[in-house]
Amino acid sequence: MILLYNTSKYFKLKIIILIFSFFMFGIVELLARQRKELDMFQCVKIASDSSLQAFMAENYYQSGYWEYQSYKATRLPSLSLRLTPVQYNRNITKRYDFQENIDIYRTQQSLYSSGGLRLDQNVSLTGGSFFMDSELGYIKNYGENDNVQFSTVPIRIGYSQALFGFNSFRWNKKIEPLKFEKAKSQFLYRQQEVAENTVQHFFNFALAQKEHELAIENLLSADTLYNVGIERQKISAISNADVLTLKMDMINAQNTLKNTELNLKDKQFAFITFLNIGNDCDYSVRLPEIITKIFIPIDDALLYAKNNNPDYLSYRQEVLEAEREVDKNKKRSVFDANISASVGFNQAAEEIATAYKNPLQQDIFTLTFSIPILDWGIRKGQHNMSKSNLSLINLSIQQKKRNLEQEIKSTIDNFNVQQEMIFSAQEVLSLSGKAYQINKERFIVGKLDINSLTFSLNRYKEAQRNYLSSLKYYWLNYFKIKKLTLYDFEEQKDLSTQFDNKLNISRR
Image (cartoon, rainbow, N blue to C red; front, side, top):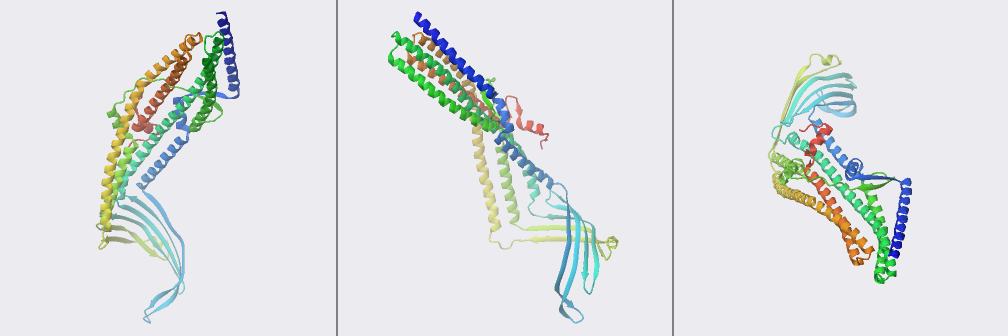
């Protein structure tokens, strides 16, 4: 008993010295490199602000935003200035000499210049276009008849319209706002993808961190048990084979610690690289607390997905674009008729002031037809192809919708299962940890064999991994549900509405 007591004091002193050495090494490391601990939600926020994936999502949204602004600009009046500053002509042209009753060639030399303003307004309902313009022209002829003239159009108002043609404005009015809604939804969708990937990197790093901590603990324990085994062998309380097994466990623990250190560095590098944060700190992560149970009705989730998910908006866009092609090819397969009318004033004079006096009324009316007589069925074939493509798109979308609905249901089922598994995995971890500590103490006093102790340690390690795995897949499914529905079931808030309120963008 005295020998065991002295041996126990010796091992306690050795362990204290070893722990003190690790502590001092940690102090030196801390002084040289600042430590920073992050929780999962901090990491998600950092990744949403600074990661490359978040930057790409923002740029995709900006592209869609400016595309929509360009569309809105086409619905507003446009004012353009048209100029021909200088047009100089010097050539030989054919003229008729009425006195000689013959055609002769004469040299012609002239200088021409013109400018005008034009205001256009597209009409979405009819597909036509109103315009209002004003023009001023100047011409100077050289040679035998050297003269100057000014031509003016003080004001002219007109309208042009395709009578039976394709109305692109009406279709754009349906499609372009939908494309912008899709761009917003895709931005929110990609943000939740960033959160998913952050959770993946976070738990990869957390698992590597836990395995490293467990490897340190395992090495300390293996060293202690090996020394205990040597002392017990002296009093024939343990076999030589068991001592060799303990030594082998200690060597394996040393190798395991080295491997976990390398793995920890790799996972930490991948973690900080994804978050796009500086490498000047020694980062560690803190596991999230288990939140209260969240009930997610499947019917509600499917409804939110249909309203918010960019895939559903993309399906609607595909159908509208296919219907647009059907309408376009259908109207091209018959005949085109265009009407253009304008009314205004014009005048010509040798002085600019006189050119604006007593203007004469100018009336222009044009009606044109384009009737296909023989095209070998090209237009009819294009129309039939567009109808067939529309049917194919509708069938494809039905299948995609079913797959998406199944994915949503499966994710919610997995989420509910993980909610139950987390609590049981946490309980198993606590029980296996306590059992390992008890078995280790029993082995030290000689009441447990080495095989039972090793089995207890392996169960504790497995329980640790299972708990982290359950926690990881719980949060992965949590953010995946938010991604698929764009709805926060914990806060009971629509992510799209939050986005609109944040950017002060009213829904249309």
